[in-house]
Image (cartoon, rainbow, N blue to C red):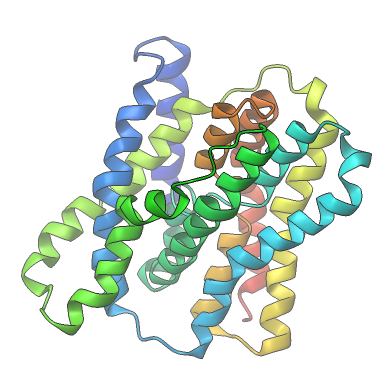
Length: 297
């Protein structure tokens, strides 16, 4: 049923956008609900229930590690892919950061259930920290902007991160049980709205002009990145839901928010959009592959 939900919500977004039924920027209102209501509710619902252990080091370290690998690869091979620094920055933002929430949550829940979703929440929070720090600085540097202040302030004020911090602190002093039914209902809106929002934003125009960068970026994001996490799980002996959820989250399509950041700073918006659009559809198949690979973990 989860896969039917994924298909219905994505297709509904595609159809309503292509027919002009909704305003062009309708996804912004939907994203506001997701960022300010649904994602914080998920953090407050799932984070207090997590039993913290050393096995959670992998999901927490995964977003940072994959960003650093992508950054290093572009340092060595970036000019071979594209000499344009703005294009390289767009590639780093989209290949180095995964869609761990909008697509990651529904797919992880579909494959691994609520136990996997709890691990996915950890991956997503660290992923956002990477975006807020390294991602924002990358965009500012590539756009030659000097306004590099306020990164920490932005991070602290961002509702999902604030909820993550509260979810770690509040249960030490008060019980959240009375608000669990409310958080559950609000959190349940995340999956259909996130998928619908993705469908509204999918575009495929002018892909041939970016085929080289697109191929390199998606090869890393959908194949190499999850393979690296799978290897790390083998080396460090991480098993069960922490390993399987980390591999799946690593295999998700590029992050929508990072593509928006690239567009905001005029870092090859066409490539950033294609990375998300094409990557989202391909990832529906590649995540199935990585789920089968991770079954034994």
